[in-house]
Length: 363
Image (cartoon, rainbow, N blue to C red; front, side):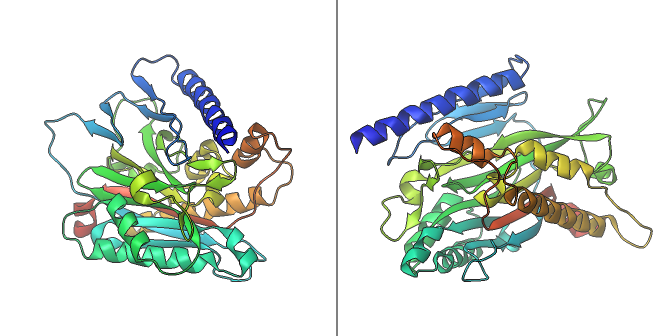
């Protein structure tokens, strides 16, 4: 057993080195681009490579990663405007699949969970576990007034969940101008930032109608990394597992601003699509306006179309037997011969971040 753990640790270090090299190349040697690589093996799990565009932020490399923006600015109250796409894998005995979600709109928190499919071999539906976990997490946020702690929500939901099974999980909350996140296993999230081409001007709410045009390009601000014991065996909470949110969950505090897009999803998305695939889908979706429809409604419809098209892209890739995918690349690194996508439940929450006053004023 010790030999196996050491092999996994060496694998984790190798992946970290590869991601470090890739991030450094991507940065064009820009010293403002900070790469923080953490390779750990806690409870037989490793986390590799966090990277940030650090032109305006600083990194505190504590047990959880906190990114704080420059002080002296007036704090804004930011909120999510979200859409959900759920595509159960065909052929599963339960048409609900094993993924689950929650959105606590009044508390600006959301999450996804992915029940581990192997439980069906002993006639246990792990989807019941993930759905109960998400209900418990939502109840935690709805009972809070100000405190929005994703890791605490995950831990308490885990303690209250009684169904048998195991799952991975990702929970995100927004407070002020920061995202608070807790990630556990191979579910995860990413944050994309719109940038206006050929200008130093920051994207603003007034620029919403330019979404989907050639004037806007999307930059990756952050992407979580999966936590696995070994290939295709993620860290998981639940029946018979020693992994718990309190001991394993990876937490992050990340500054965001209006116009950023948060995508929270199960591994059915991240195993099949690369970040560039997602960015391309978003960039190609036109923002449609009309004289009879207000901008907020147009924005909601645009987010819904983007979410559905990202899901459709993931499904198309999952059905491919030849396409190069994140899952096939990881399989090759693990010494396996595998090509194409991975058929699985695909659950996506796309959230557009904007100021709360925008929703109140209904501009």
